Length: 114
Length: 111
Image (cartoon, rainbow over all chains, first blue to last red; front, side, top):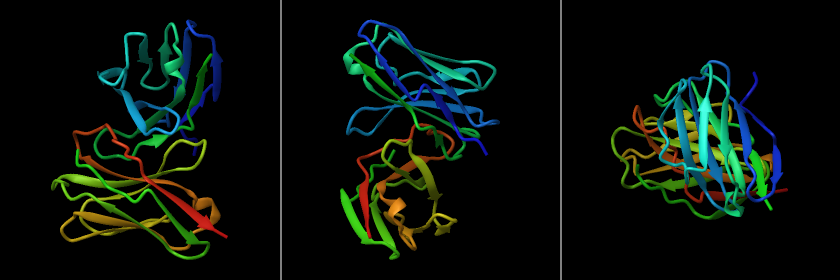
């Protein structure tokens, strides 16, 4: 079946511009997660959705970062006024629920801020 | 969440078994052991998880010691496509949606 789909796969933007990253989770998965992976670094948790609600936004680096989820499905991560340190691979994952179900990851969006 | 320790790199010959160790000496009774791998330019891929008993699926086997302080992921017949970074993670059931990824083990499968 279809896995987690993320778009675009690559995004190059100029410093100061806003970007939107999209995630289509696996159908029926109620939990959705955003992670960030900088070059040569481990995965950094950003935000978690259960349905359309985000019980934990503690990993968002600053108020320039926001995310929403609609219809219990698609999620958008928005970065306003991008900075060079925002350059990373942004990964989305989904799971059936938060109760010990494995997370299934997409292949990410590689964001480059010039 | 309990911390895990893995060797930074390993290699094995194609067709042989790859045995990847993980230490999690501070694991709690309700923490599961998860294994993921990440192939270059792809997102992490779920492999297997377990609590106390050994587990096997189509990808791998997971052997957890009786005291649960360490585990081994076994790829029975490694192929070149198994070259990846393998992450061992402990996760508390019902309360932890954050997977804490360490630095993992870089496995190189040699032809």
